[in-house]
Image 1 (cartoon, one colour):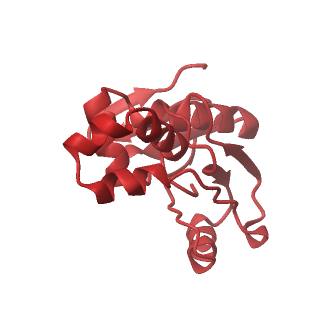
Image 2 (cartoon, rainbow, N blue to C red):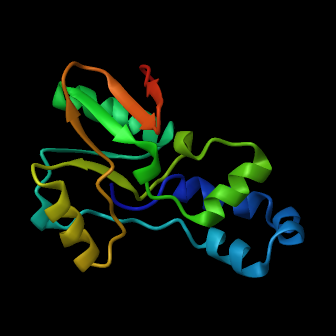
Image 3 (tube, helix red, strand yellow):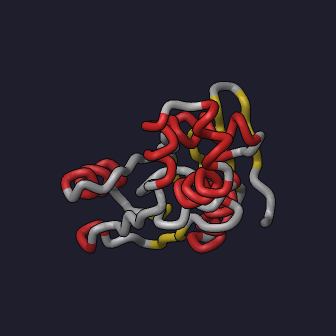
Length: 154
């Protein structure tokens, strides 16, 4: 994954609720949230087998779509999905699930060597992380410790 969960929606929520958020959080958190809407294109060297931009429906929907593109199962670890603290704080206050929100310029990419692709992205100043792998079957699964969530068709 390149970019951060809910990055575009965080910026939009910060803009819509700026005054209320400034009353709850230090200015640095609100300013950082307002500036989160940017693109993190994977570098050409990554040569993805498939990629999906994380838009409406967020990371969960993008994982489901990517599993369909690859025609295989996907297993992702919720704790490995990059998310900024500003997003966590704002989503908590506004009672939103950040993994279902528009991440705009963030991408899920499928490559043969995820660690190498993440290294290439980081070398190009693109935030990235290996968040999962393909698995048997056709289900898109997100785990968080012992909890397993099967993603449904968007």
